[in-house]
Length: 308
Image (cartoon, rainbow, N blue to C red):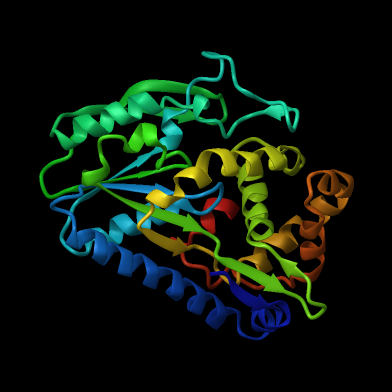
């Protein structure tokens, strides 16, 4: 169930008590992490694999890291695999095309070597060593066999990515894995009754992340957005039923950072936003007030995935 936040209240907290606002938001997120880690630790003997799933920019990388830390505080060694490293080199195959939106379908599982990852997971649960590849988003190239990994008895491995609950991955591992779904279970309501949806809140994360870390401009993210949403419907939603646990990664103060940072760029891309069904994003950029966050944001906050 979505939690509804009042925009005026968020702006008031951002202005009057940025330190307390940030600390309260981060503590609520960490409480979910700790509770999930406890449940995962209790079932470790039977389920040494954790599959962490969620739509684009749900915060999978940071949440995987925070779960690792929480699990290790319980005396359990954890390992982390990012599905991003299983992307195929872009010049090694014919990239699928989203004809509906006239863009390359970057969300498609055909962009990834899911079979290699599935094979790796089966080897891990048998106590065998695997060699994890590495993918460079700047060059678009994968390097095979970079990082050796062996899962010892009593250890847990966390695999995060948008296709981690795909049947290609989960097939044959159902009794040995736990599944966690990440999402932004929040919406923000204005005094006029307008509501900024979870997708609009998440768009701000994706736009800034791509411009900072994926060599893609905000304009490119806008053009890709309808295909991103299509990919979530086709490649993520059908497998969400596998998830046993859900973590809401929305930090109530984050939109007071992300949308003011995007305001000018979104104004310059108003026509493209309308075409991408993102006019709400421009209105959000105009209404979220900035917050003085630099002195108070934790070093390990999930927001660093998007703002650096």
